[in-house]
Image 1: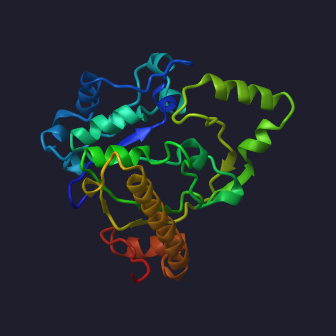
Image 2 (image 1 turned 120 degrees about the vertical axis):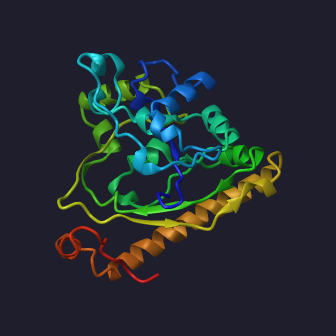
Length: 280
């Protein structure tokens, strides 16, 4: 994406933006979307074209809030990080549709909180919606003639699980408090509970692997054809699952998967070369 100069806008859970408890807070007007763009900085916007391409090296890092601003605004890590500086917007069907209408590159996580906060037995497994409304994002992609690219990522799930959401909710007293909190915050998707599992990330951090799968041209799909959109939805999900399995298998043959060997290789080149990975 950096070489191609593409800046992708992420759709994130409303709670990450410090949305007031109980308020929907997920719909953004055109003015708000423009404001989110402006927060990227004029230097970045100067290179952004109609398809959201930009010089990523010019994108500003998110600035910490002023004193007292974090508590008033909320957001991730007590307001210390404002992800709107990255161009992120609250996830909703309407926001996705508006961004696609503007021909912007958009990052969408169909699994939502359920997939992000998966139990230990669900590592690297998808938790996409099933049944009525499952292919909503595919219908929006068809309406806007978008191209859907499944992106598999391996590395983030390599954490040590101490307790998952179900175990926490089953605890006396604590479970009731967590359930009350989860029911009070905005939902990124109907029916989900915002209850993060208790985990810790082992050090050193594992190497991350990404695979861009076979793209699907949604312009060839009739948005009103339920069978067609459901079939495309299933095809994208299947492609992503295959790519996840492929990455998990292939990373075992990465000669520089280990942290020490990888750092030694890159330090030897004065940090000018990235350690290679497995053969594709």
